[in-house]
Length: 342
Image 1 (cartoon, rainbow, N blue to C red):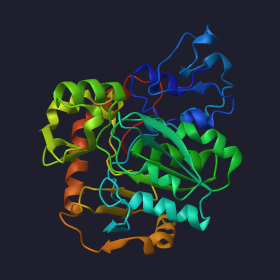
Image 2 (image 1 turned 30 degrees about the vertical axis):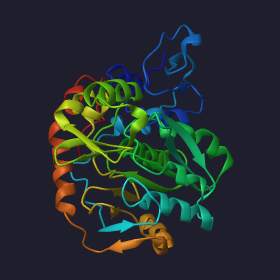
Image 3 (image 1 turned 60 degrees about the horizontal axis):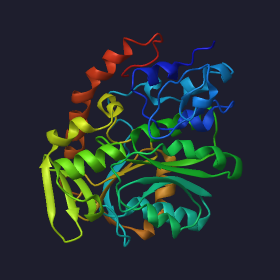
Image 4 (image 1 turned 135 degrees about the vertical axis):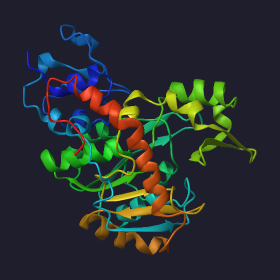
């Protein structure tokens, strides 16, 4: 039996569920829902998620595009070319910049489709492939609940030539590895700043209902700010708890992640580092510069946003400090030695 590296990533519960292996496996041997787990390889009926080594062809593509196997860079700001604030007329988590850029690139025909997620009023997420500039506006806003965005790429790889990806750091990382190793149809990666995310049932039942004592359908927005996790409700009220009350309930892979700003993206976008109602934007690549300029007319630009890059770096350092030791400890358990912090 072949032994893909991702089997150990799944077995040690550090699989980010980014979905890269699902979309790139040439044998179609991997499928995944919200989280991954190893199933009995002798019973194919059980393979609704996880990896199926008895149908694996031994190409090891999955290992070459797994962000956990690839590891993390020590300085995730080394490739930042410019940093500024931006906002659009689209109502989003803050400035709506991600949605505005993606919508404009679809309108111009520079990108055939974007993969991303939407959510319903109960904060359940849904994978989506967007080809319409207006339809992608349904993806606006930060979700905080997770879905395997890259697993939605299998059909677009067959149908389109120019694909965009919108995702959190592990998804941006997986998309970059796919682009470099497997499929060059991904032309732009928009990465989101992310400290951690939650499985839907944990967010709904534990965080919202039990800890915050709210109804999920009443919540219109979440945010991490000033050491607290905030929920904003339809009645205009804000509610908060200290981050340590909710942090331990994040997905286990998030506690091993050492990427806060989506270092592998072409353009990274978040709310941290910019004033309320604005997004912070980090341009990282030639493609990022090119595609941002195409959509720039849709945005108002702030050249020197405050609190600025210092806060972004502070939170990135915090994430690294909290998680790097966890990641290095699990690496010692792997039978392969490619992973690490570079």
